[in-house]
Image (cartoon, rainbow, N blue to C red; front, top):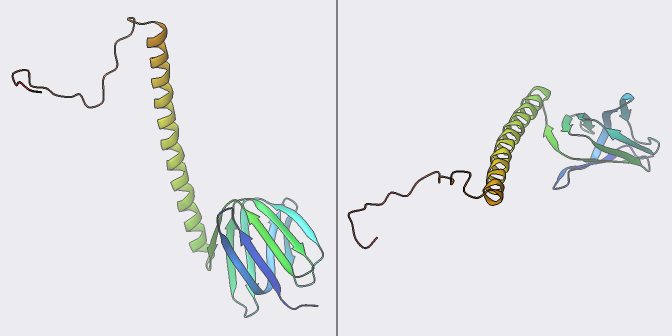
Length: 155
């Protein structure tokens, strides 16, 4: 029986963790929290948005906040987590602050995208109305009208 685990945590775009000196992993699924030690039985489970913890053979604890994912244990020594998004940290308080900042940034980006989508939708509807009912609606004004001097020639 091996005395360590090989832990990998991946997102669609990067490998967050790839270590072979892990003594224990702790995660949580819909049924609650659970631990994984070397020699663990085969396992496949879905992880909600949560924090995965692991301890290296030297005793140092690390953390990864995952945004849902799938965890597998195979051959009693390989733990693989595939998640949509993850943030690695050494300190839970710092990790929480990083995750909150990421969520705030995502919320702002979503809000801006929704605003742009509404503006685009409104422009499309106005353009369709002008096409379907020509002459009934005023022509659109550009955001920055072009200024021309009527007294100058050659422009």
